[in-house]
Length: 498
Length: 48
Image (tube, rainbow over all chains, first blue to last red; front, top):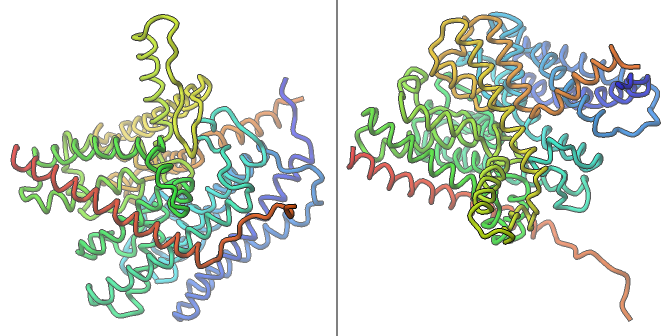
């Protein structure tokens, strides 16, 4: 029997949504200050409007009588699912008012893409967008990227294990409390922010010959997009704008850092190198990266897109890393990427669909689920081959030895299958509008796995239903289904529950 | 007689060192991956 949510359940959800609105509203003061300093008055007023709405929502939430009931995991799920709809809706206001978007839907698409750290964009004439608005687009990557990790941690540390999420082992506790874990995540982000921005700014300033302020601006933008595996860029030609292997190298380091789980970050900080090398996620990601690299480079060599080793290495490696880490930075034009047919195309698509590590800002199936699935298959095969009655080891390393239970394997496989279904659903909608199978599949994976690479479908002229489909895919992919299912369950039980 | 249990405190300087060291290691990983890609690309160009 479905239990109808009580008034207290709504109070808990409303109260916490209000808190999130207030926080994002406060974050909105940063681009507002940027606009005021840069004398960009029109964006400044649009930021004021947005901040006002966020803070009004926050005030409304705080007016709700402080609920007695503690936020449990199901409330947390509903709050997260609603927050990832509410925040892009309000955050898109300055974008709508900028005049750089063909419609409200296009601005909402970019806001969702920013917050979900995807990187697909429908902005027009990006090269002339006000710098404060460009900054806001990139800041959305940071808010969404760091936010999703904290949200996941807060919910799961407080509420125990949820079957589907067991596949990502998010109930593990590396540090004694959520507070100390969150503090470490922010320390890691700030450390990378400091080092990343300094190095990127230096390269842009001294190597590319930009002015200092311009270098700092580009350094900040690239950092947000790389470390949060986003993929937005300050210029329409994306990272190809810089024409610099050194710049690309620094961005690649940040992309790798962004795709690493906080457990691996923590082990590196504490010099627990053995824990990093034994980690199932590290091993799986290295193997899948190696295999897809081989496929992509062989494919590129076969098509004759690159005839020299250095060019093939630079472009092939960077694009594949961008795909596998879920970043979506492009150093080749969209039309050229669309021409990467056959094996190279397949290699990129597989890398995008697999994604990075769990507890990171990367999207896709995630290395841990891929690793658990593969380990489970190997264990099954071994069980068949060994003599009857012999025991086969069922464990793996994930910040310590973990027993591979049938529930864990089942959960990992279920979420993996849900991702495949998500990729296929987006492909089907694009096919409906007459796009080719290959490009439809590629773009759908890019949206569902929160990557952001495009072969040309994502464009202001694409059908509205397809835009809505990609928005839905970005939302579902980012929240890894469970939070969205919890929201649907909450709505359904409000309607049909007793 | 032993005193009450105390958690080992680490200074912010130790944490900063750990952070910078980990960024350096990430850079080394990317260098290693680029070298692997270079070998793969060289073989691919030579064979194909």
